[in-house]
Image 1 (cartoon, rainbow, N blue to C red):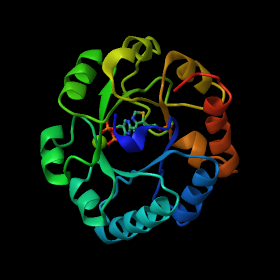
Image 2 (image 1 turned 60 degrees about the vertical axis):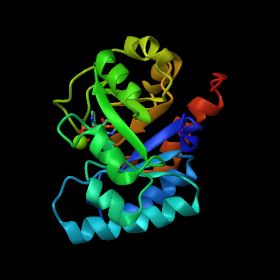
Image 3 (image 1 turned 180 degrees about the vertical axis):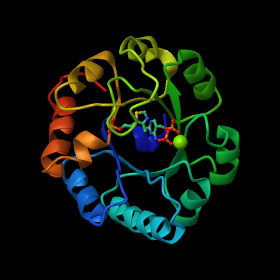
Image 4 (image 1 turned 45 degrees about the vertical axis):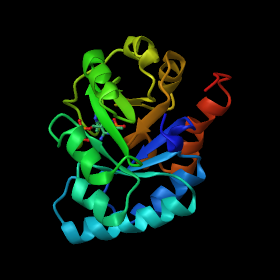
Length: 211
Ligand SMILES: Cc1ncc(COP(=O)(O)OP(=O)(O)O)c(N)n1
Ligand SMILES: Cc1ncsc1CCOP(=O)(O)O
Ligand SMILES: [Mg+2]
């Protein structure tokens, strides 16, 4: 297990571009977010670099890892803790070579236990499944069943759940074994980001589930 992935909980994924990005992430951290992912699908390189660098500083000050979505070069340039890769992104082996052994490399496995087994064996630091629910951010995302979380318990790496997760449906995923709840809209779209984060965090601190 990667030493920086010892603490399960909320995995806050950004929904930018937005003017108050740093402020919003600061609130998510106050609400207990354990991991942050910078996810910005635009091609404004200068803004993306500046935002990612500022987030790195913010997260490092709280001892929370910052992961960059898709963009290995940006992750390396700002000294991020790691990168998240999907099936359309570069290969795990290329990212490992570029970022080194200490980097957190997470991979999307969608609804595939087979892909999770393969990538965990190849050195992925966490595997992500989903979408578990209809996602406002990615309406066409492939769907996965909570059973997958139970079936993947023996993989030996943390399992992340993503897709349409809200305070109302998250408990079932925690109960099925999700080590992290990756949330975009129900977190950064909330009127009170800190309170929303705290609600997800409380599912771990009050669940009594040993982690
Ligand atoms: C934690 C986490 N899980 C899944 C994804 C999705 O990755 P991907 O399939 O590459 O899709 P995009 O996010 O790049 O649109 C993720 N980013 N983070
Ligand atoms: C990136 C991604 N991959 C599967 S669903 C999703 C988006 C999750 O966002 P939301 O929490 O708003 O459903
Ligand atoms: Mg991707």
